[in-house]
Length: 576
Ligand code: ATP
Ligand code: MG
Image (cartoon, rainbow, N blue to C red; front, top):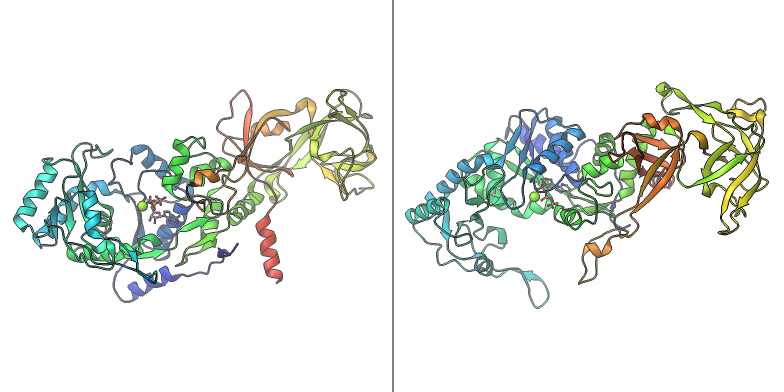
């Protein structure tokens, strides 16, 4: 899979080294970071990486980490996102008590800082519109030998307005005297800079859009590049850790800090998380939600924290994953099988085992007395000695998986076929004696067998071994439930790699969800709680969904199957 991260991480990393050096050189006395989500979508697994770095670095140095909502885009933000972000962050196990901030609380301070730049002759009000600003700024172009270069941009004719005029116009922008988009406030830096972000970037725009926190109070809103460094500085953030795409913005970050003469926050970048078969861009995720390609932000196929939770992932598995991938300086693609491996490892330790049958086929034990029920004992979790055991009813008619019987067995098939013996998990050894076929459809409607009373649950005197063990549930006491089996939303490893004219939506798989309406489980599953993840033996981990009804049918989402491809890859690598 090419440049895939192998998921090895050492105790330290380049960020912690840089922070330690700053401390050693007295550049800061304590470490203060922040996690700065924009409340315009739900948190995803990429954010979990950023969170783990922001909170983790602070913790490593006994420092603090703020939660700051970067909310300066009124069109896209709203309170429901704030609530969703806080809920997911808490669920992941992070604590920001007393350190919850909003960039929108700084509007007044930011306005003053902008006025300060105007007074220094470092900002001006421009009358060019958006398109003109773009055109004057210029762009990267390839030269004859296809090497990109950046010809200088052109100064705006309004660039040399006097300080007095700029202060007056900026105040009137705030007062609502001008139409949306008719004026901007720009930093006066260098229209010839090879870094386009330094070519007089826009600091404020006029936008009459009510903000979810400040309402109609403001009709001018600060841009990210101006707001972010100054919000960091206002909070005394020593290390502003962000993903690599902000690297090119760093000179601007430093320019605002220096020229506003504020606390010297330092920006350090790390590689974003990219995950195979997954999209981690809020803009694309919101599209999946809006266009109803998924059932919502918390659809269990979504890479959101809420989606993973609903699917049965644990905070421990997610935190383990983001620790294992480590912190790198270059972008790469992480194999999603590593994430799946982390949840399997965690659930293997924690999840209680139950038996269920997804595609039922009737099994009749012809030599078992009619009406007789026997209770068999089963351990709840072989990985957890304190997990106890439970009783499972056993009777004459059972359900087994359709797939566990073959009329004509292929080679190396050790499950049930006429004449063969298998053990029923926790129960007896049976011998297949025949089967019934529906005369019309030709489908097998029931399998017949006899049991050997001497072979009960492994405690039989001769404790005979057979090659196959299959799971089952007793028909009379079975609990019917609905199962949702998930597969990748995108079959392609890199969903955004599409031919021109197509979008990532063209890559959506048409079999990412299979619903089974009528599966059966042993009666003990009745005590499983909504949100709890269990293991159905041989089938995988399943999480009881909130769509389960009190009285009616339970719904179980398959978290993952039991087959751990990653563990196999790892083992192979170790052997080499
Ligand atoms: P998107 O690109 O999906 O819109 P974003 O970066 O704009 O994401 P924010 O809410 O601004 O979303 O992100 C908050 C923090 O999370 C930022 O510091 C950002 O760098 C970080 N972050 C976002 N996506 C990832 C990712 N895939 N891997 C690591 N960090 C990420
Ligand atoms: Mg962002």
